Length: 117
Length: 112
Image 1 (cartoon, each protein chain N blue to C red):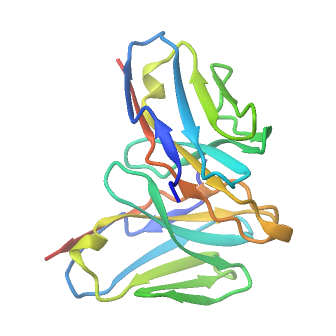
Image 2 (cartoon, each protein chain N blue to C red; image 1 turned 60 degrees about the vertical axis):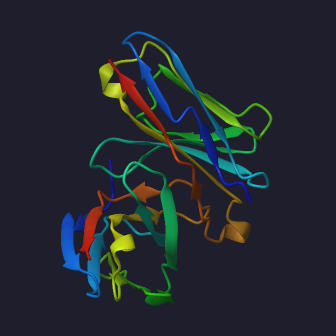
């Protein structure tokens, strides 16, 4: 079991640049989630996919943010025209999806720490 | 916006003591989960309690849930220095799983 992996682990960029992060979920998991966490706060939900379908997007996900999961496996999160306020840890999680409405345990990756200068 | 509030925000204890963290939330939930996060790293799932359960145990962890008060507590017994981390409660609303809504966390420091 290789767990959820994220790449890169750290990214420093200048304001106005575009960045893209990748998440590889646990192989048999059909759900994939993105969260953002700022210092001293709990993670905040951004979006999630079931297979390749993006089922929910938070209002936090402005037009500058886009996420994809083209083949229902790995996912990318792109931020265009980065702003200093985008500096945060971006966390990815995956799950099997709740069976028959049951609980859905999410397994988190190590995160990508973004710093926008 | 975040659903939960955690109390205390920070807790410092000696090794061997028990640590209790509380979480309150605002809306009805399907289940409530507790996660641990070591400094600057990803979250590790600890325990899940469903809305129709009142208490659950896992090793040195004990979680209670009071849906009438919309609150939960996490008790870590016989704490160890390795328990030093931030602890978050997270709620799931509805019956399809889906997004977690996290509290702001309790920062636990266990001194050897």
